[in-house]
Image 1 (tube, rainbow, N blue to C red):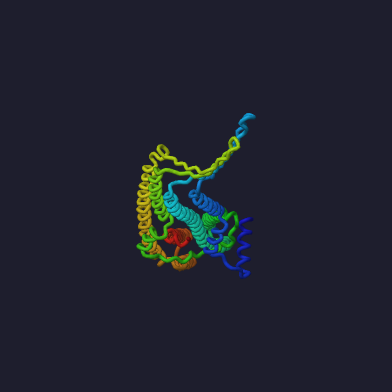
Image 2 (image 1 turned 90 degrees about the vertical axis):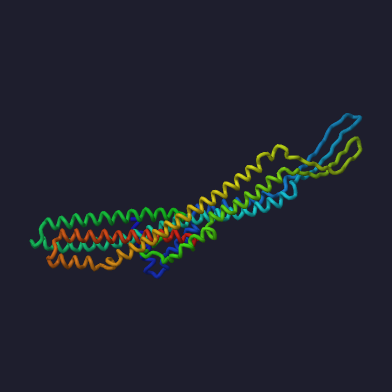
Length: 393
């Protein structure tokens, strides 16, 4: 009942002249409503705030002292205030490191957003694939149902045998079972998409039977995008820069830290005040930090190279697959462009040139070819979407 209600609402909206749902409008809706994306955006803001806080001065120390004495000497009291700070060059180096960390955080968020939107678009393409299959299977079901009605009339007049009637019943059941399976699988995908859209139903997606237009670009364009657009690659580059700054800061960690302050004391009626200067030497605390930072930089360098090589190989694989799929689609499409084959079979059956069993077997042959074509078209659009994924950003 719920499925039927969604469909009726979609048809009403379309008939009333409302704006038809498109893949672009669905992606815009998901970008706004997706709860995981909202969570990642909040994490990004939190991370940026945390990065900015790391280059602040330390806390200011304030001490108050009160000591009670005897009746002769009296009481004494005093207070001090001091501020500690790192070696001056450390703040410059940390500022540069924080800049690369801020850029890296942004690229990390963009990569997460891209994965969420790409997954959503692939689900949409799969729904369109089932929409096309359901449409084709519905036409076949109606044709066989019409043939069954005609044969049933002939059976009542003694012109058709019960065996032919049973053959049509079985074929009708098989076609209906496949149709129901497609509808069930599509509904599962729609439920997945609803969850990705923040549990908000996207009405009308079951009416889309045309894939969005996409342009296949030169393979060099896709390879160049890895270094110019790919957020994961850019994230890794920023982390290499950051780890280089971390090495610089680790080396500066051997430099002393300072503190400067003011002190006041009142003792035996005498008042004392003045400045204090302190210095701490990192003899033990900075051990192994330079080698740790250098190892982290090396790890990011090799990780970036490995990731780049893997993505290049995947792009080349997908591009080769696109070329193959395009050839197969053309080959199948050249003989399955219309319903000419099924119409010829129907005429041959009505003219007595073939038996009902031959008709059903031949019809099943062309149906399987049609399903193969639909699968090829889906795989082509899915692979092309993966190649063009950076358009989602």
